[in-house]
Length: 118
Image (tube, rainbow, N blue to C red; front, side, top):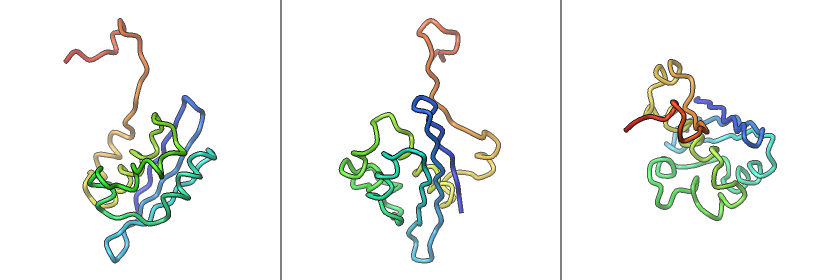
């Protein structure tokens, strides 16, 4: 079982996403959230997704516009589902995930030293 926390500081909401591989190869997904929009998204998504839902954006129920309509375009819950599923499937390294602890989106000023020159 793999669990990720999506901390949406901008809207002050937290989401706990758990993915568990089933014997049939599908994944059980559980989303606990203090956001009514994400609870609606979770209800529309259902409790089971396929490997194709997390490996192919085309046709993915995780990113389906009808299912995602409850969440804002900036919400990190859908990528959180993908990350939890990839951890559970062994497509992301669990030891590396523990080492880095988090990925994040940072808001910064254009002139800030925080920008990465590319």
